[in-house]
Every structure is written in C-alpha cells, then in structure tokens.
Image 1 (cartoon, rainbow, N blue to C red):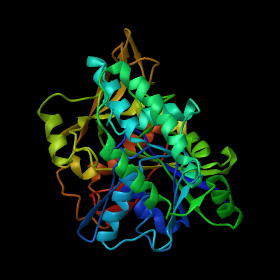
Image 2: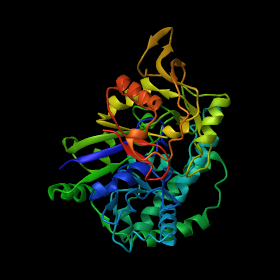
Image 3: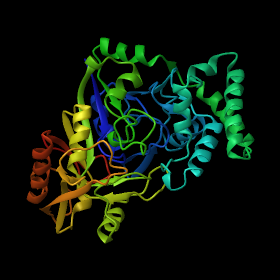
Image 4: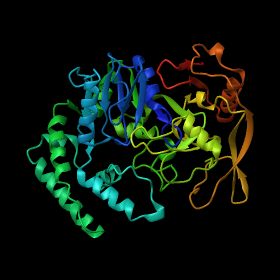
Length: 424
C-alpha cells in the first residue's frame, strides 16, 4: 500500500476540506501533515457547515481514523475549542476514538502569538499578511531546536521547559517595546494542555507505516497551497512549512517511495489572502463579482480574498513540484454567468514571453498574457451527472487539461459534499 496525498495547487483556499470529506470513505486513515490553525477547511452537508482548523477533514466519516501529524503546529486552545464545537454539533472524535496526535507535533504558545504580532507590526508595507496565530514563530523555534512538542506535556519537567522558552520570548519581545499581559491566555493554555492529554498520542512515523504494513489505505491531507511553500512559493510571502507533497514525507514520517497518487486541487479561477504577488489579480468590478459570488472570505479569519483569473504557468509549476497524478477543479459554479472568462497562459517578464514561474515575481512583475474563453450561463449547483455538464464548461476543463497535461478527475459544482462529479 502507498500513501495518497491531497493538497492545494494555488495560494490556498482551493476547497481541500470538502474533497477530503468526499474521498474519506475510501481511506482507513486521514493524516494532516503540515501547517497550523490558520487553515480553514470548510465542509458542508445535511444543511450544516463545519470549519476545521487543525483536525483532519475525515473526522465526519464513521470508519476513518484521523491523525494530526508531526509536521503540524498545534495551538491547544484552538484545538480544544474546535473539539468542543464539534461535540456540540453531535460529533465527538475523542469519545469515538477517531483522533490521535503525533507526539512530535510542536505546540504554539501564547508568546508565539505575541512575537507574531510584534514582528508583523514592524514590517510596515512589507507585511507578509500573517494571521497572527503564532505559526511562524513556532516553526522558527522548531528549526532553532527550542520548541515544545506534544509529547513534552507528559514529562515531569514540562513547566520548566515552558518557562525557559517563554523567558526567551520575553527577552525578544522586550526589544519590540512593552510586553503585553498574557496571563489569561496562559491560564487558558494550561487548561487546554490538560484537555490535550486526554487525546491519544502516537509516534506518527510508526503509526502510519503500521497502517501500510496491514494493507490499509492512507490519505495525507495538506493545508494552505503549493504556491505558499516555504521553499518554492512566492517567497517571502509564504507560509512557514512545506506545503508540497514532499512535506507529507517529513510531516508524517513516510519514505518518498511510499507516495502513491497525488491529488491536486485548484479553483476554476484564483484567489489569494494576505500580501504577496498575484499576477492575475483583478482590481475591478469583475474581481469584486468573483469575490461576492464565490463567498471569498477566509473561513478562519473572515478576511476578504483577492481574486483573479486562473494562472496556468503557476498551475503547471505546482503540478511539476508535486508530481500530481490527478486534478480536482472546484468552484466551477462561481464562473456561471460570465460571458467571457480568461486564462493566463504566459507572463511578460523582463521583456520576454515565458510560460513558467520565474525565481522572483515579488520585485519583478510577471504581467499576465491571457487567452479568452467562452463562458457558460447554466446553473451548475443542481447537476447530478456528467451528462448535464454544459458543453462550454466541458471545453474549459479540456482546455486546462491540454495545458497542464494531467486529467481533471473531479469537478466541484457547489459547496455541499454531494455537489461533486467524477469525470474520469
């Protein structure tokens, strides 16, 4: 058996949560492999909406186990709140023994959030657009070999380790100015740590590989998107982890040869949250219409997303990096009613016409070169079979397949789990 990987191919918010939920009945284990609680994986079914920040999106399938992997950074307060909200909605993953956490996953402390806010406030116009949840500083402590991990909560000297790290943070914060009072947040943190201890802890590398040895199926779930990868994204306007398929290996403890299918998700157009380059961004009424129709506001933060046409050079780049074997196109329904839609096929970059993502699109603009495509007027949200797909939408799907060289297997035509069509 191999681990299939599902991840986003744009700047995040592609609809990964919904697709994991749709595919979860096929898998014995869903394993989240990177990122923090800035993720907002939205799922809709039975006239209810659920937003998951840390918990894998297979949690609603009765037969599927869920693992928060070692590559994830965890805010115990947010995780506790997330689980309590699920319990109020009639789902209790802890009581049902459907959730485990990697001992090697790192913890987000209240002072990580203070460092995040202090750093961002000093950047002025160069702000990254951080969600201020402490994710970046936590990954910095991880690579700096200072971090606290989930497994540390079971040690007798956990409080001493915590105090040492907090004192380090205080010395850094002092350089930014006055240190805000975080006593209430600290109390909530330790209450959440006690709650965290009630969730089974595992060594994710042994846990996942045992599933494989037993012939069971595993899906690795990514957060954010490939263009936000800390190595290969639009640096420095990126996240703090490896969002590509390679991140599944280090984020769960699996060998590269154990990767099976790589399922890449992209919107029928593009969006981005926060700062950073966005070649196809629309600053006009069309961009606002896409935002309005697509409800393009962050599931976790509520921030308005920037919108634009699909960017094929960027999509091809993400497909190459991840070795994508099949594609999922989401939000095709949002484009219904546009007489013409546009696809960026090349960039005008430093006086040249190129069809790939260059090293630097932050200080050197990559101006999009578009091709015009006929739109469709039909409402897609009630479609149940592939035979009902409008011819012009079918042509748009084939147009993308021809450009990127990978088949679109699934087409999402609405937010509900049932509004998903299998094309191939």
